[in-house]
Image (cartoon, rainbow, N blue to C red; front, side, top):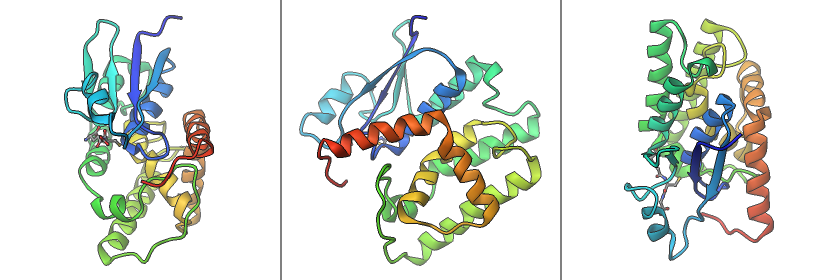
Length: 216
Ligand SMILES: N[C@@H](CCC(=O)N[C@@H](CS)C(=O)NCC(=O)O)C(=O)O
């Protein structure tokens, strides 16, 4: 199959925004080319601007050359274009809730991002958490528990949706910093971690670290 999509991503150890559409694209089963641009190099900004008008990654280039940037926009596009992948729930109310989950992640949790930065393949000591960071961790755990209880199934809304994709980097952060989770939430995190997309990403991050990648 010829790849009709090209997904441009950042350094896999750090680029939490890139991981989200990668998980979604893998879930569609569509062929695609993955192009990695290294973050934090003197040439990074100029290289990204050749692809993405926002100067940020990820970006998805379509077969006709159109470029879609921003993790959530890409996930939404893939959900619309490949409805058979079930990336958005069928039921309108569940769909709106899945979008609420995705949007909350996209727009929030600044303290978690700041204190528990993504270092995908690494294991690191937990820093002394600020109160706001603890509140945000509790919020994520409660939100996951609520969806898992309400919708049943392996993922937040039953089958894998854009909500799971948006939270996939949080699963990595929980592992990196050894966040202790309730059993049901841990089981969910383990299912996300076991996805082929996450395991591929792990190999990419391990390779970067083996090549001598520093810390963000
Ligand atoms: N809101 C954007 C955020 C994207 C973003 O901040 N990407 C980072 C990498 S994870 C980036 O490209 N940074 C540019 C740089 O480091 O020069 C999205 O959801 O895609």
